[in-house]
Image (cartoon, rainbow, N blue to C red; front, side, top):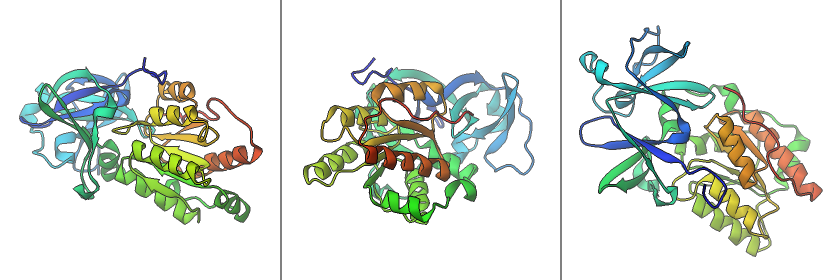
Length: 310
């Protein structure tokens, strides 16, 4: 357990080609299974190899190498491959990889975020090193958005004039390391006519909140991703709750993780809510609850709403 009360998250290391090592946070991983025969899905994205019956439930299986721009897995390679079953974005998705290496413990503060100059379609959200090897943390939100785009009704939601005015009276900060997630958040809030500020790094978000509080213009509502290099959402929430100048902020952890474990950990560090990405209406309703909470001047400990079931 860390000082934030959360279980430490590791990294699952795997290979998409012979030279480079990639990783996923273990909170995203449901299980790892050896290759098994797949059923073709008609009209599926070219990188979807088919569906596999995992514990009786058919799930789509993506050729991760092909999805991020490497040489596709060839039929003769499949028997030696593995499927990483992930639990995120409200669905189970399998990623076929060429080789599983190991699971390592990792302090996410040691993961360096990708610079803003990296470009738009970069599937890596951060890098670290292990045993003198460069480890690249894959941005699954970017990857999944290319294959299973979020539908318009989830991206945009209308609010009443009264609710719009309520939110406009509160300073809002959203933080997410994924460029895709930041765009979704920005589009949803801009569509609803809600002013906000945005950054892509937990450390920067904490600095912005402290600077704002010092000038007596505090952020009232914080919407934060959980899995972020440098300072993750759990740690950011813990720091906010530990600082008397920031502790009154309403914290929504907004995550691609879909497990009850994420909800429990959000509760432990003092988040008010934990919501699964991405549903604009749910997010705006959560922010409205935050505005009412701030207006009431009460302190609410724990989680006000549950993660959406997969």
